[in-house]
View 1 (cartoon, rainbow, N blue to C red):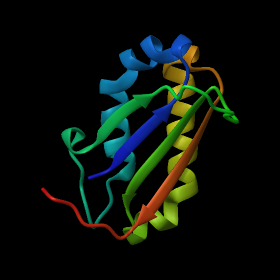
View 2: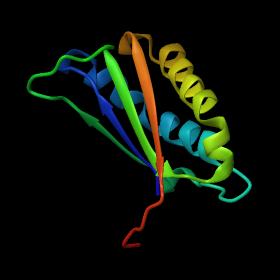
View 3: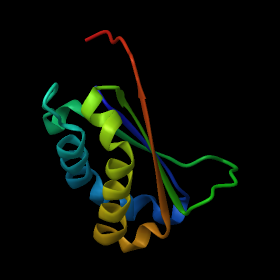
Length: 109
């Protein structure tokens, strides 16, 4: 199941919190591929506010998911699409950056 960690600051938490349900659905659609269709409730999202940080953007999203071939092929497109979605739907998020980490994984579910 994909995990999205959103790193930001106290100022942006409430703005991003309101976006979570729709972002969850958007990420599920973006990560769906021929090998795996995702439902929104299969994506875990969390907002993290580090005590101290030197971020390169106001809001940074780190997406961890399984490396299906279609995701690997589309990885840059997925990152750009998620970034554009966050910036369009939540202007209060400020500048944003997205990383997609694709790997082989196991899980307990």
